[in-house]
Length: 308
Image 1 (spheres, one colour):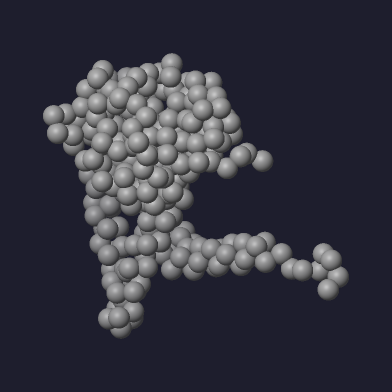
Image 2 (cartoon, helix red, strand yellow):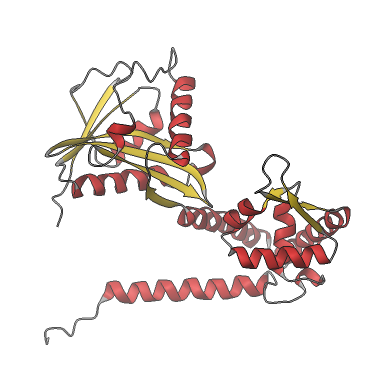
């Protein structure tokens, strides 16, 4: 066969998968009524209705934008329309005048209750057209799609260890260890991993965010041509089951290899059974103790491929 005539199956498969996602998106937007100017037969589109639901008991407008991943100008237009309809009020926060809070009026709460009722009716109508077995399959598939779409929304990025998002994760990490370890956890007794140790070129911190909120972290201490040390792996309870721990681990390994580390090492406590299972399934082998970490019962190491 003539060289260069072989089809690129990987590229073709990517094209097929993208086409299927687009087809799914078109079906869902039509099915839920996102194409209608009068969502659920009310006098407003889906965007305004969704904002009503998100505001609930009151929300910071900036937090609304972040949680919905919407442009600030678009959110402002939606809020102005809802204010004009008498459904929402916005005002400066008493604690910080720079922060604007959105709240539902009594009419807004009544509208939200009506939207909830009609949303339930729409879902029930969809399910009623299917036999029992297909209903169960559809609901299970929706749960899986929701989980995977949420996982795809998580963003990983380096952060300075003293940034608020990183500090939130590091404090939550220490608090969880304190709750789970027999006798608690005192960071002062553990091998040092201070901000200076986790800042390039000495190390790095990765923070995972979901809709702008920190939900996980992982860190490395780098030692040039010596094995890197994995530190501070943590995933918030709300984000567990999304494969985030494995994603953090793989990204930290990739970055360690880029810095020239031949391997990654870590130590862990016997109480962290989920972490131990993750490390073993990711190719880490248990080795003899290589440090004097007082909270450790297991030590692991994994060789890394050379970059390039």
